[in-house]
Amino acid sequence: MPDRVLMVTWDGGGNVGPTVELGARLAARDVAVGAYGPASLAGRFGAAGLGYEVRDVPDPWDAAAMAGDVAAACERAGADVAVVDYMLPGALLGAMAAGRPAVALVHTLYGALLADGAPHPMGMAATVEVLDAVAAGRRLDPVNRMGDVLDRCARVVVTAPAALDAPGPWPDNVVHVGAVLEGPGPDAGWCPPVPPDGVGGRPLVVVSLGTTPMDEGPVVDAVLGALAGAPVAVLALLGAHLDPATLTVPANATVAGYLRHAAVLPHAAATVCHAGLGTVLASLAAAVPLVCLPLGRDQPATAAAVARVGAGLALDPRAADAGAIRDAVGAVVAGGGYRTAAATIGAPASGPAADAVLAVF
Image 1 (tube, rainbow, N blue to C red):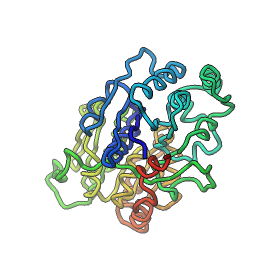
Image 2 (image 1 turned 90 degrees about the horizontal axis):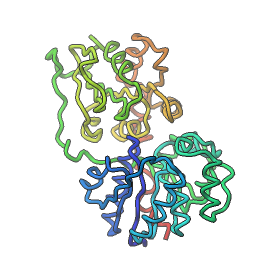
Image 3 (image 1 turned 180 degrees about the vertical axis):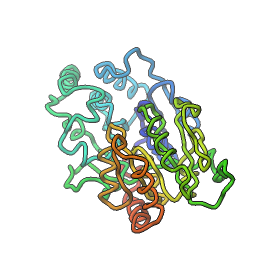
Image 4 (image 1 turned 45 degrees about the vertical axis):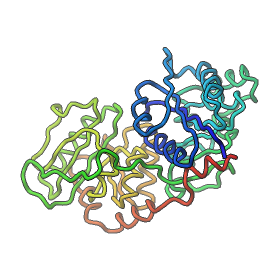
């Protein structure tokens, strides 16, 4: 079993929770866990009792610099294994160059996005040509396709149930471990507020369109407008970048800042979201069906997967009018098979994430 694990990450929103939680689970198994990433995440890892080294650089996406910095960080930490966010392929190459087994932490679907080595969303950080140059500079084998980087990892840990992903087969180093979700933490004991109209006892619809800016304000506003007067209570969770004053909040709705999904979703009858995988998996774990309004990135693929397994409905936020949104929410709140499918897909995973990392040794 490895004595020391270095986790390498970035501040991307939905990737942070699984990374922190996996680190905490490894630490609970008597593994010394440290993390390496931007200053903005130091407090989040510190609150989980994990060591943290800040990477303070002018260009955090420079793959060559990332490879060198991560190789050096592995040496400083004395890491036996590096667990690296897969969207940092330069960091994966850096861990390999340092002679450490690299575990790629995939916080999106795998089969729908990565099985063929396509560059998106790994291409946010670097092109294949850039990574090939990094590999050459580190005396590693050439990189001819983005998937080469993942294929060379000791493990590719996918934090989603295999049933939600596109059908396999997958490479031998790929393991689906299911959702890796943080607990309610400081939000434990949260109770649904009574909406301003004072009418309680209605099904709670949670509207959660992410914590990072994706121009989601107009979509949140459209959802609030669509649900105005509906026989539901609405709770809209807003990222810190979104000003509630820019929204028109109906009488049956309440807005709030960040709250952990593990505290809120057990009270919900439905989630309206952007189909970020973290929000989707947290909803499924609570047996809450979804209405997905994907905004971009990997979200259309995740929304399509939710619809495919029958755990909710997917709408195009650019085309769906108020009636379509209201009807979709009404359908999943009413039940049918949506809640049953959500509970089935969100059932416990076949293999714990910590075991997948520890099995490298």
